[in-house]
Each structure stands twice: as structure tokens, then as C-alpha cells.
Amino acid sequence: MSTSAHLPAEPVQAPAGAARSGGTVTDRLIDANLLYAAGFDDPGMDARPVLRVAVVACMDARLDLHDALGLSLGDCHTIRNAGGVVTDDVIRSLTISQRALGTRSVVLIHHTGCGLESLTEEFRHELEMEVGQRPAWAVEAFRDVDQDVRQSMQRIRTSPFLPHTDDVRGFVFDVKTGLLREIDPSA
Image (cartoon, rainbow, N blue to C red; front, side):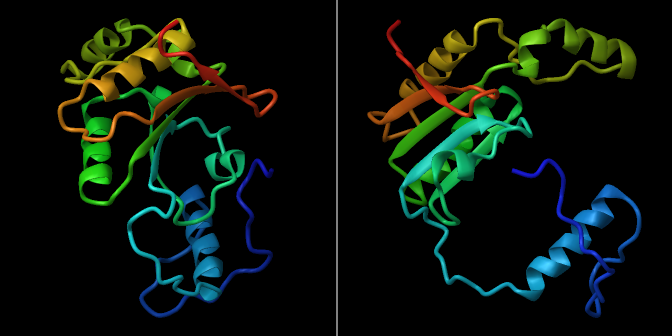
């Protein structure tokens, strides 16, 4: 696995109307997209995931979900946020995923060494002091990753908006070994 973006060896000639490239990280990503688009063939896929599964995971850059789970393009919906916690917006996305796009299973993936383990709700207070406005959202910090996975599973299982809650499983991804450890929801 590479830890940095694969960059073109030489500048790519941008098609008319394409974004201008330069020296920022975003410019590097746009250059990479030009290479991608040059070889892109529309796979003709539907928005419905082939495996009828939604994966909710942390946004941590060390988690390569498709490789870690053996997934291909089009297999799943992927919903990511800080901590992989089930918030109202995650419920919103899962509701659309299930009710409009046919998913039936939910896989939750938290991980070892998560940044949310070192934060507290005091973070919101510090933001308020700095910018003069208190965030409406909760930090959702936690100390026990296993318990946070259980809480996220419970939030999904009890949501009145989700019709498919019988196949909800939670895991902790070990960032040192790449292995998933399943969390018993009743422990």
C-alpha cells in the first residue's frame, strides 16, 4: 500500500475546460484525476451496491476499506466520518441507502489508535472560545472503542427509519496488523 498519491511523472495536458494544475495538494489530485479520466471506461453500474451492504467507518487515512474487505467498485456504499460513529447524518445516509438503493446489511468499522480517543467534548468549548460560536454537533469522543462500536450498533438497531437492522455487525480494525476483530453487541 502506498502512503502518498501516485503522481504523474510529467505534466498531463489538460483538456479544454479542465481545472488548472499547479503546486498545491489539490492540484496534484486534479493531475491524478486527469490520468484516471484518460483511461476511464464507464462501467455502466447502477447506484445500487452489488453486495447490498453499507459500510460505516472512520475517516482515518490508514483505513483502505476496499482492500481490507476485498471489495470492488460498486460493491458497497461507504459512509465515513470522524470515529465512524453513528450520528444523525449517518442514519440519514443509511436510510437512503436502505430505502432507496436496496442495501440490507450494515458493517461498522472503528479502529485502534483513533484520534477521537484523545478528544473530549471540551473540544467544542475550545472552538466556541476561538470562533465565538458553539458547534451544534457533538464531538462523539470515546475512551473504549469496543463500547463505542456497541453504541453505534445499538443506534442503528433502534432507529425507526431503518427497516433492515437484523444484519448489523461491528468491528475494530487493528491499524498495526490489518485484522478486523468482531465486537459482541451484548458484551
